[in-house]
Image 1 (cartoon, helix red, strand yellow):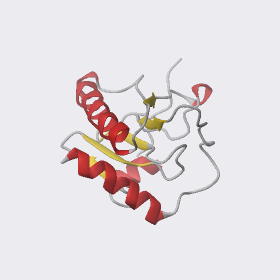
Image 2 (tube, helix red, strand yellow; image 1 turned 120 degrees about the vertical axis):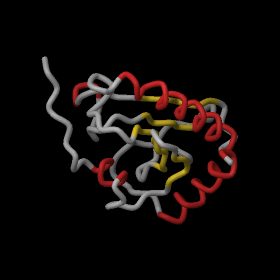
Image 3 (spheres, helix red, strand yellow; image 1 turned 90 degrees about the vertical axis):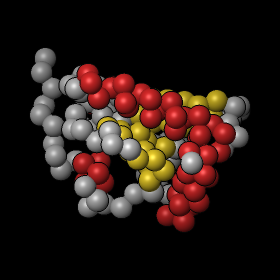
Length: 142
């Protein structure tokens, strides 16, 4: 089964083009990381390639080493910034697997023993909280 074509107007493509604001924590030639506006835990960060791909199934294989390197770098900073016991890293492909934004991305979510994740829908986090959380991560990525 073939996946639908990449939609250049998806919300992450608009964030990459600067059409929608984001709280960025990291950016290089190939990747960008920013705070999830509906975090499942404080520090929930997204990492995505700048190159267009719907998900990992149609991604340019040459983009993946850059992407996973950034995922690791950001995950280390997120874990430390939020004094987390662990880090949950998730990546979804197609609606049946839970994908809701169709631009390849990884979720990095700090986890604390005994604390459940919030649902990933519904309430958008206050921008000041996202900015403060982003600042904690940025300080560790310098």
